[in-house]
Length: 233
Ligand code: ADP
Ligand code: MG
Image (cartoon, rainbow, N blue to C red; front, side):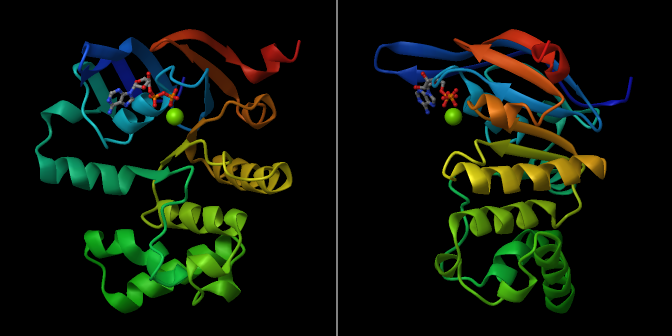
């Protein structure tokens, strides 16, 4: 079996609420191999986004371990964690999260600012990625001048700009019609074909069917984990 890009053990997250701590994740164990394509499913409120935010190092767990590309995330100082995160993973959100006042090329180039690349290098690399997602001719447009599906392509280009080995996507097709969703899923399929590991949240079975493996959450725990081909039998 390929090396694990993601390994979590006993991963838990509780949120303080007026009624006391609420356990959004209750000790999750999961391993995701390099090159895999995993759909995270489950009802609203089952902890999917909480889990993805932990995988993306956007939040810290209350308990448990997370090894990203073999490194124990909790042991890294903030700079080392930022570096590991930047060069290992790209995050795609349901709401695209593009900066409205910036051109598409500058949106895509933004992660390279933090990586320390000079402006010409950043823009050249960003244009290359916009070409890759079929938006080369729109490079100087603003996000509000393109469709939702195109905005999500820009967000995927931004997630790819540091050549990550892992893409995390939380309901990336949640705001898109079914035709546009299929186009986005084709793009994820191509990226996975190039060897990029993909973990994406969806609650639509036809979106999940693009993945190789389907992991199901309920009440903050994993209640199912099977290969897509098995589901079809
Ligand atoms: P999903 O993405 O599967 O819909 P979430 O991970 O967003 O689920 O949420 C899991 C549970 O944790 C939900 O009951 C949600 O209300 C709760 N929750 C999420 N974020 C917070 C927060 N910041 N404070 C309190 N409760 C939260
Ligand atoms: Mg969610």
